[in-house]
Length: 306
Ligand code: MLT
Ligand code: MN
Ligand code: ZN
Image 1: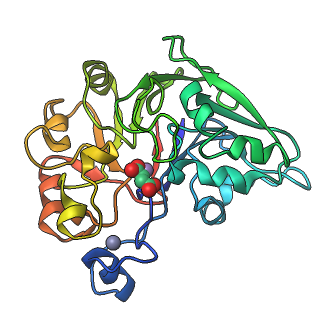
Image 2: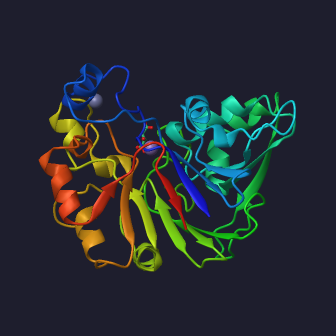
Image 3: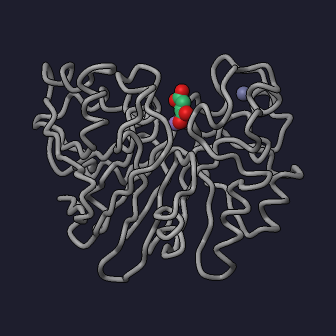
């Protein structure tokens, strides 16, 4: 199984168009040792031609252009993106669906009922696309039955309900529903290797920790270093908890959680990194702390083979 990180940034990207925080300004001017990143998405394939896109980023067209493997060019109109799975209905994970409208067949879209509801109401990408290629909603039921995804014949996907947040435009923003956010356990049935992917993780519940313990590769929420990062910088009124993200540092933070899994068993990688996060500074003290704990930071174009 091949996994490709198309976008390793949180919503906004890095640098964010209107942001002059130390990181965004520094990467723009070239005065900081840091690398640009597009918004959150990965792609999975077993044969290298047919890909499941997991989350459809606002930067999808740039990501496709950066990865020629996603265009196998078998017909006059073609794409390697055979289907899409979305893990929540946030702008950074669903806006790219609109960019796929030129398809000549309906888009197979794997989503929970809660997310599909949002995509039929608060952010009506389903109704909009019905005027173009159309969407074929394939239900992620959260009933413990593993999901077989058409373009990935030898892969099993198990979706885990997570406590995080529905987007601000969701009809159930303030009344969370099971399935607003999911994590994925992706198993290659041939190699037996497992990947746990959760770009938005607000709390480590016991079923989440159990999944993390079983994974060979962890791709987990790296949004913010501290809970009040955006507030302290004067950039937002929202804390990590308000946004449904667990910070990395401090008691109960992601570093502590990943440490508790021990060393040697799994590869630990942070993904969905917000542009304010000091771990983006490649020679900075926070990045050094991660390295000391055996934790990597995902970048656009990072590849895994399991
Ligand atoms: C989030 O996960 O909280 C998002 O990245 C926020 C956004 O896209 O605005
Ligand atoms: Mn996000
Ligand atoms: Zn910034």
